[in-house]
Picture 1 (cartoon, helix red, strand yellow):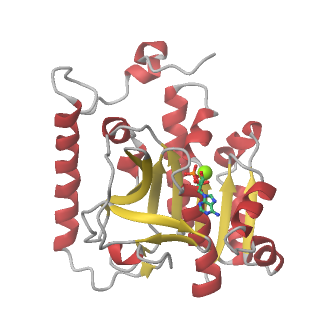
Picture 2 (picture 1 turned 180 degrees about the vertical axis):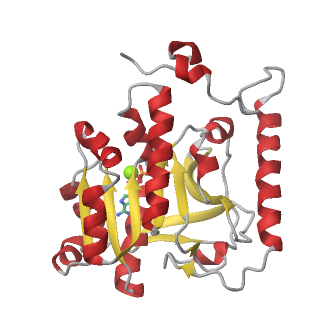
Picture 3 (picture 1 turned 90 degrees about the horizontal axis):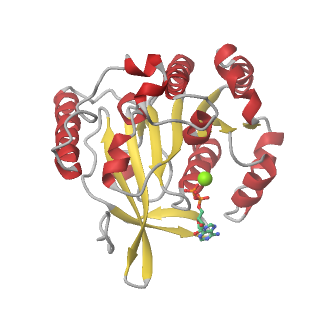
Length: 287
Ligand SMILES: Nc1ncnc2c1ncn2[C@@H]1O[C@H](COP(=O)(O)OP(=O)(O)O)[C@@H](O)[C@H]1O
Ligand SMILES: [Mg+2]
């Protein structure tokens, strides 16, 4: 059965709380977006008022990026890395894990619902990141879930993943992607439940988690994504068109306990991976 957007299809979906996002039709997407941004800012000003002197940071080691977020992700936080296809999410995530192991002595795990281990390792090799070697040294583990196995993550409470985390003393995890993971549940209610379960499991494990999500092109579609509200941080990657060329850009729209830069920053994918330019201006339009 095709997945449905209609709340009337399942009785459970009717019981879902209505957010301001879904109610009045008269407001424009821009107005609704402004409302959500305001809410996020209030959230942020509250956390900014707390002393964050003792907050431990997990550096991504991605040139130019850590300085946008006061040195790194908050340890044990859950960060969503969102953007359209081909915007650089997988490369960012691989770089985060590779740097974690090789520069900061923090072992990593990659959970894939999309691409095979061979494809990912080959992709990483182009940037000089040898994940096979890290795997041989027991510093990294790659787990590929086939669609029919996805349920087991929830039913086992993450069982076999947890064994690997303990065995390798893993500190950083990547999930690629939340979108593919949720596609495997048959209706909206089960999908929401599965997302909540996944975020719950990640919190219990106490790792610094990066969750990749494929999201729509427009700002309005992006703010519709409910998992945004479950995450401690949200990053967007863009591939912007200007006339006959495109430019890459990255934006932090939410980062709990962090006074982050409120700017969309250009980045490049070089043969050594992603380099962000926090001081430069972005050319191109975000819809
Ligand atoms: N070696 C490379 N040098 C420069 N750009 C690259 C290289 N490899 C891939 N890319 C760019 O990165 C894109 C894929 O990035 P990826 O992280 O897989 O995207 P996503 O996961 O967001 O779909 C490609 O479409 C290409 O534009
Ligand atoms: Mg990808």
